[in-house]
Length: 495
Image (tube, rainbow, N blue to C red; front, top):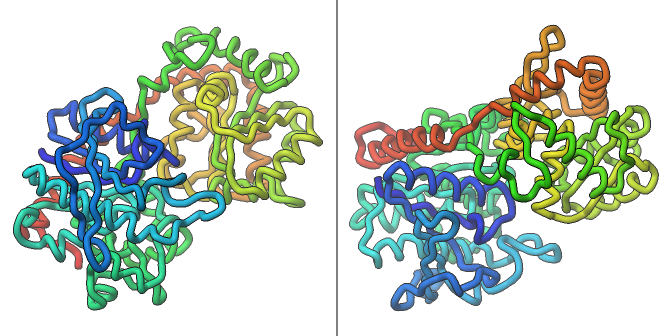
């Protein structure tokens, strides 16, 4: 099948979160299964041109009241199986940040920037004379593609091309001043007619949700959750209406990059058959973060964006968060790695200065992230919502038992501990409150000290869990065909 993927980020070229990993892994797996997959994304200024080949001739893209021009570069990053085309426009993408910066979290010209990406991806396919059978779009920056396929491109080159839009995180929707619709070259009749209108503002994701032939998200539980008022971010009514077209496909994980038996970023390798290396990694983690060398005390690790979505108000909110109580009332050590909201960084630094068994590093460091996964005994993820989540999958692979809020992909991947027989792969709590976090961490620590045979049994089971991209890709191929059938009128689409 000919599949065009349009994305704002993809590893190893550009990344802010799990979207970049998922796009790269899914594209590679689809290619391995024999499909003709091509990816289009922006060429941000920090992407080195040295390994890229320029596609002959400039590309003209209709944007705003005229046309913007840019260069196109082709590369084959990663394993080299998937061609990636990068749209280069210095005015739009020659700056720090993908969506914004710390001083300007949301670039004022994002509608123009991602109109260039969406329209440019379709223009490029025409230039290459390569008609995709389906276009797979990812999150709000690419949500204009299904709109264009139903308007400007309804007939002609893309007449039989189906569209799939994947929601990686419904909390980000691309909401801007309604007058920015002129950047899309769609008239005011489309403000309501194509679904952009959102409380008198322009909502790019909403229009994509209205127009895509098939909608997916990254776990079955999250697909159900976003149809509720609690997790629907005001899109729940639309998503309930489109429920027949909405599917949850669990992300896989990269078992080559995250493999404790051969991970080059950890000092000692290990497997479920021999856990000795994990104990040595724990000692290395203690040394790395300045914790006392006390192998009897368990380590709880966190690698996270420091933000409300990740449960940090409940964990370390001033006066009510549970982290201080966890560190002072439980016999454990805590290691946290990440960056994020200023209030959260300041609070964690303050707590670390008061509690010697809490170590915090405000940075992103891939080597340290791998070491935390390998050397910790438990991994805490108290997310308010988690569309899929990858860190709990990494933790399972490294025998580090997750402690998670039952939501989204966390609910789909972590099996609750059974105190009777040592079953399960982690500790799961239902209601996100400071007390629930404390009680669940306390439960895990009690089990550590009182049921060590259960901890070992759970570790070995967790390390043998597999969340395969092969299975996910096979499901996407089914949905691609469904999207094509809907485009051709073989299957009725929810309007």
